[in-house]
Length: 360
Ligand SMILES: NC(=O)c1ccc[n+]([C@@H]2O[C@H](COP(=O)([O-])OP(=O)(O)OC[C@H]3O[C@@H](n4cnc5c(N)ncnc54)[C@H](O)[C@@H]3O)[C@@H](O)[C@H]2O)c1
Ligand SMILES: O=C(O)C(=O)C[C@@H](O)[C@H](O)[C@H](O)COP(=O)(O)O
Ligand SMILES: [Zn+2]
Image 1 (spheres, helix red, strand yellow):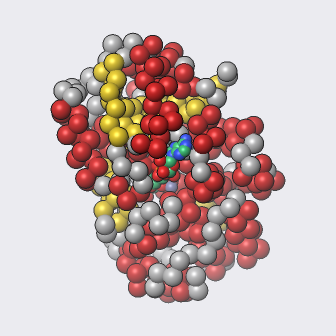
Image 2: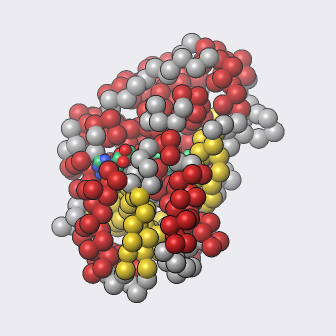
């Protein structure tokens, strides 16, 4: 069993990202963070039935005593009710400030467990153990934690960095096809915003990625984490460049909220959102029409929807108007200046946005 370790460089909050096969069984990766501690594993039933036992054995070998908290599955449960239930269990179990929370699951578990860790008794340490492709390439890294509000996606949350990320790529074998594609949306996002050579590679290896070829997936995860770690190290709290990681998300979050959380997966909404952002970039003369068509082709090749659902222009604008990147009432968008180069744009005319969403 081999693994690679990347680092998120954030001074005294720096941490490793371990990526590889069989890592759920590697006690030495967990021991420095959990030895002699109590551990609360936050997960859900679908993940627990497959991976909780192995993790608990490993934690025991690492010198920790663990208990589990299962939250309901799905984006619709990334909410106050789940968070409150986690707090209740932590209190019932007598969890204290030294208790380590371990998020075992996809991005929903990671975001909710991370927010619980950021706020329980004003903050306890946590580990990310991502089991979806999306969580391994994106949500487990960078310390954004949140729950949704009926009126907007990820509207209540905190920045709270994990102590470490342990991504066991073996877990991807049991991931449903639709969830794999959702993860590939965030993978190709890195190509569009920051790395034209990676985009070329993804385009050339789309079939292998969709077929879960182990070496293709492992390269995709590593390169994605390298890019995300570098952006986060430069701008941990999104006062500037980190916003490029939101490419496709202003449209995508509007889709998720307008459709009711869960109908469109996050990665699917981001896929369709990136197509709209690329079309808007072309309409603004930032990229060629042929580049926008290429964005659409690659997104489709990864098994993702390219056409946004019918939301209605006013609803589009209402949801986009609530985006967290906005300043002084102006919608902030992440557009492309080239394939592989994102721009943070604060002055897109409302009429241009209307035109793009009404044609979608
Ligand atoms: N914090 C961040 O930086 C960040 C980044 C990207 C996305 N996100 C958030 O992540 C969430 C999406 O995460 P996701 O795509 O992982 O969805 P998810 O957490 O809902 O997981 C997808 C589904 O796969 C199941 N599952 C998880 N691991 C499995 C496995 N190994 N085998 C079989 N089934 C498995 C889950 O139970 C769930 O039903 C969204 O809420 C999004 O906003 C956060
Ligand atoms: O880490 C980031 O920064 C991102 O924007 C990554 C996104 O893929 C992710 O969906 C994130 O949760 C969106 O953040 P938000 O601030 O727009 O809620
Ligand atoms: Zn995302």
